[in-house]
Image 1 (cartoon, rainbow, N blue to C red):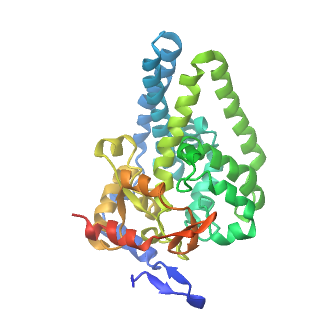
Image 2: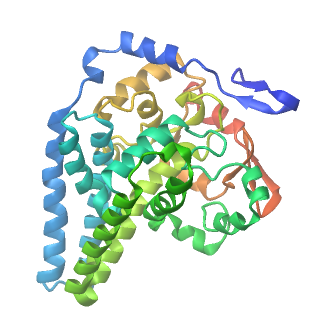
Image 3: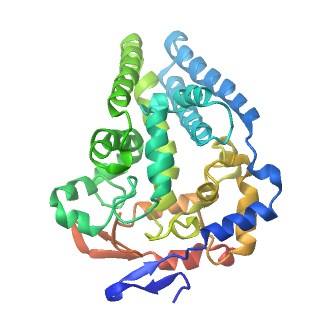
Length: 362
């Protein structure tokens, strides 16, 4: 049996090892001190990103290009919006330093197009998700446990939208689900869950409507070209982010501890794309040090591969996306996934740990 797997009460499997604090302390001691310093200079990346977005939109609207050129520009604009959101994610964690006001400014640049206000993101992602990563039905970014679907069978319909459900429309999920899920958290979870107590939900909702109004205004100005200035960029940006986010935890066990080695997964991406996407593939590393700039994450990866090779898991990005669409999304147990609409369809997560650990990397 894996050292991190232990029998719990009534024979239930408990996965995870509560040594995250010890590992974090060791890395802080053994890695260079500048690994964990704010990298404010990286904010300069917003300049070329903004130039590409606005330049691309202007070209689509004013240059009279053929449809295929507009399509290429629309994909470029959407990709850049997605990249900008990945960088804003670092900003709102404090990895680039700056005052809260400046963080919010750049947070709006990154997350505004996806209709996620910065203060809402801080509460939802930084506090609730990071504080409850892959924990039972508490993590707002998880499809949760089978118990949830037995208690509320109506939620089974929602699972049909998800990758791994086998429905044809699940293949569209990545193209809208970041914004869609954000609205579910804001409109439903933030209203009822105690973790959001004190959060100004009404202000966030008003801000979402402002973002929506700006998209609508662009669509009106664009006319038929809105397909290229609004629809395709919006879908592309969502798909880029979700292509990482959904693979970060959905193929990992649920844990009673909050150890990134046990509940999170990194990816091995194309090195060029990895740089363009601000090392977002380094997700275990990020959960160990949320305030660390991602350009320093390779140092943490190297340390973990050398010191915890059997536990550090990084799957090739393409393989992770394929697994996402061939496995169910709900937890039957800490280490098993199940389809709530077909409970005979069960997937054991533990072999993935053995197959894709750093110890097995050739």
